[in-house]
Image (cartoon, rainbow, N blue to C red; front, side):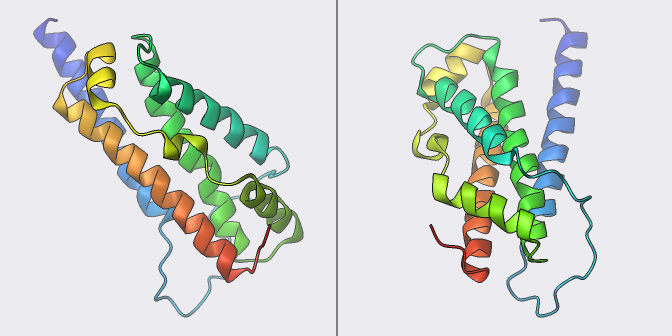
Length: 167
């Protein structure tokens, strides 16, 4: 790998890490906040297909994490899918506070489905690192994304509890 390629790769990782941090901030729920916002910082989205989208992303992540020999080209897609899960679930969490019927129906269907399967599929660091040729920094980015996705799921469960959504 040339110096130029290495520098470009490092820049891509930096941008990725920044986007992860921004998405983590975007879905953070402040439990100490007493006043609910009355405005929607996220545009109202179409939530009717959310469960299908989340299931598709979950399946793709689970396939890669559960594989003993993932394809080398699946690494970038794994990162993208972890970000995508947060990107899809985050707005739902936010809109649940406004008690919109469509949003709460979508939340209930996601809640009934249960936790994403990939959250019970541990990251096999050795397999992932070897298959994708990743260094320690890239592995840390993966772990941060995975942890952020798990945190987003916990935030969703907390909001379901606050909205008294049951299966």
